[in-house]
Length: 190
Ligand SMILES: Cc1cc2nc3c(=O)[nH]c(=O)nc-3n(C[C@H](O)[C@H](O)[C@H](O)COP(=O)(O)O)c2cc1C
Image 1 (cartoon, rainbow, N blue to C red):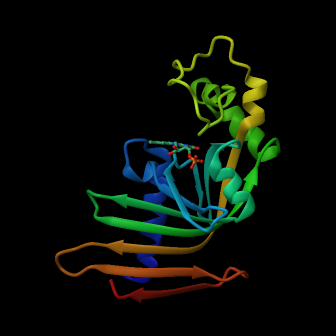
Image 2 (image 1 turned 180 degrees about the vertical axis):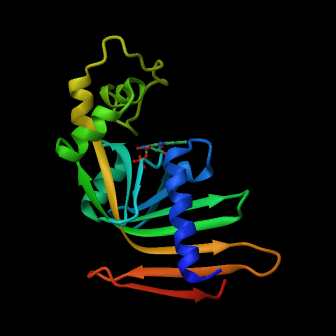
């Protein structure tokens, strides 16, 4: 497999992660950096991959810790692993945050009501509560407030790394895009 084919395969798997909820790439782990420089990691749903713009997107509540961390420090890493294909992809990106703008408005309009209702709760993600809250319900949910809490995180991909585990020999490759879009790619020791 050539480096070119590896990259095309990687884009294909990432795209499949957006469209197929059953694929492991649908729920990557994403890492940000806390104010005291500690790594901070959690699962999200992969919402969009744009191969030509080299961007990746997920949705989040702007009251969440990750949103504050990315506001202070936009370096955002994503990790994907497909156990059946034995493929790991790591992305290094620079995040651009969207709230109450055109990007957020479009993503909000395409979201399902049951997804929207999560953003309408008065309990901020990660806030301490006396007991676990009742299940969210569409009834009485204030979607205007929900929209205000809705954020889209778009990562501009600077680096993509591919690792394919195989009994015939592991394969690892790195793809880095310079600021002007020039691509540098190389095989790496696995
Ligand atoms: C399968 C799965 C999918 C998730 N999808 C999202 C998501 O798309 N956006 C999000 O903000 N949190 C999502 N979460 C919850 C996060 O993992 C995390 O618990 C939450 O966002 C709070 O993270 P933070 O306090 O570090 O910001 C998901 C969790 C799981 C297990």
